[in-house]
Length: 207
Image 1 (spheres, rainbow, N blue to C red):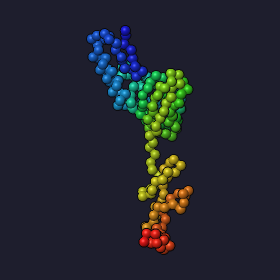
Image 2: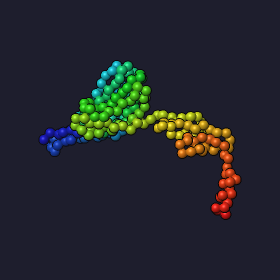
Image 3: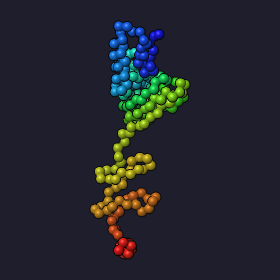
Image 4: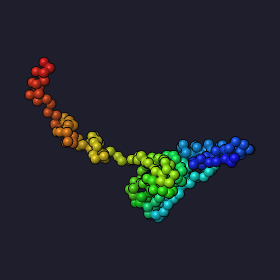
């Protein structure tokens, strides 16, 4: 029985196979595993609209899709598509540092499963899960790693502004951050303290 290969290119040696070369092949397997666990590769996708196929090379470390971290580089003048084979099941840390206002889509080689796309202005990072969940239409899932900085200037308080960073401006000395109602955004307002009426009421209640 001949040896077989995993979807990630690791040689699965059959009993009695590879006499005299077992050690070399095992070392290659370890090198492939090392690439998948912590390897980095810069991949140029420079050019006009095109599809770049990342490869898995059985029993070899030369595959362009056999790295944990892949950085897409080069000047792109059209929308790009980058693919991996349909049976690859792993996760990638992707970085888009291309020049040019065009999209970069990461997907399986064939099928209509979900894909992951860097927008034309997204020169950032994504954690992408290649699920290989279907033999015909496998899906990509991503967790974006944003590079968005907090809004506002030094000393301002950050708030959620429709899912993005917002900021509340500083007040003058002695102001406090407060809100005038459940639907009102917080603002810095003068600290008026406890009114006389509230103080009397509290004295009656608490003694």
